[in-house]
Image (cartoon, rainbow over all chains, first blue to last red; front, side, top):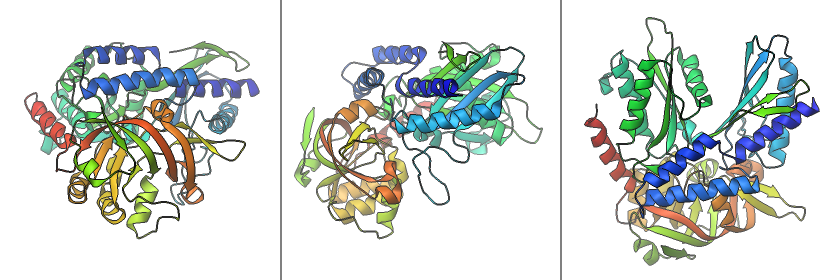
Length: 292
Length: 191
């Protein structure tokens, strides 16, 4: 129990203070692409300094340490209740030492008890598999980018978006336009085509577990991802919405079945401070390897 | 790079133009969702807090209490400002605010209030919590910590060379409006 808790505190620390390599690389490329002397380039330079400083000081990259979302892949017989207890203890401990901000508010009373624990906090998604391996992925998702997420119901007359891939494209690009710089761009999109309102958003968020430079195995979705990325970066929204060449760093899209009456396109937006990390755990709960 | 130093006079603020980068030094007060709603509903500022010729910073920092009772600011980037759009114009007008630091930009009501009362919107780099926390030289005080919780409290901060970009000036210009218009047109060509 203690080894597991310690491992999860370390996972939280690393997720909060260190950006994964794939995201770092994408930001370095973005800075190289922006024109020297522009405010877009200045913004990216500050972002780079910030990444270095956060890592060196082991302090949060962003003060909004976000919703704490765990994704656990576990074998049959894994004690989910014990994991949940350890995760809650880890979140509490990580908050005490400042890896996480006191970030969880009672929606009815407005009280923030400073523990980051409460209904739905942290969120834990379990997935059982046949392998004996236990892996825990963690996403810390800030509120600014969460607020610019959007769910479209097709057909959307205002966007001339019908129930086809072109309609999905229009909806997704509208989400980028509406977000402007408010989600702390350059951002990353996680999209789900189909599903119901709940699973649509849930699957869209799971796309953030993918590596930025991976390719979608489905050729149609892969083409849509590349097209949205290219088109969004031609809009001139730029880092922080200051104008510039880098509006998005990546686009990840999945599809889920829908009922005939519904056609949702759910778009989640991740800020440049893309905090995702993961570990595999040994039997006693100690960290075995890092996943990103 | 333009230095902007407390007290922030109307002349100093009116001289700024959209797109200019500034380094801000002096005393600022944080205030975000709970504070804006409270002031909008007629709440009074606590004794010791004055926004006259001052700056309000949309920020919910990470603060660590030290053994001697003081606070150390360990993360302090801006939060999204558009949520304060229903309230900001009134707070600029009633409390004599000269500058609003935040991120993501604000709308028409704030733009009009900046022009009328001599105020600017200063866009800090969202997510840059460490670079900006380094600019916080001292945490002077905290107000409403109990009522609103730590991220939503009013923190009185001494900042030095805090980088930001003027994205709404006191002459009716908004970089956010410009980028929205240009990006809408660019998208229309690509649909």
